[in-house]
Image (cartoon, rainbow, N blue to C red):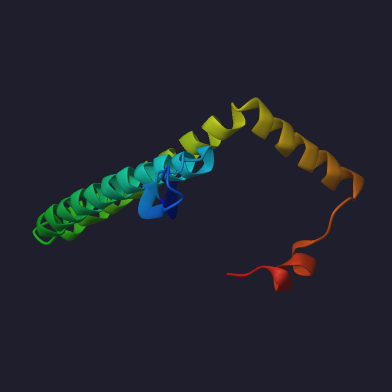
Length: 129
């Protein structure tokens, strides 16, 4: 919004002024920001729901784990590790099925084979973590 004065000149040379509020057309950037802001709000709400659901599941699991024998507890731990490993491999397969990602990995391997690049020890001091 923009405030401005509108001046009217009457037929006798007298002037009259009034304050006017002018609506400025919303720029494309503002619309884009508003849309992104709404998307961020939706994402934040989803993350909040997921965190709440995760906490409920963890509490349920802790209650059950507290009642298991040591043998069954070890089996649950083994199964959880298996599930974690499987999830990681599925993510790896997804990434490697992406042609652009696969190309980047192949390019990196070729650079390493040629001796291009730097060792981790050279880069590590500059990595923030």
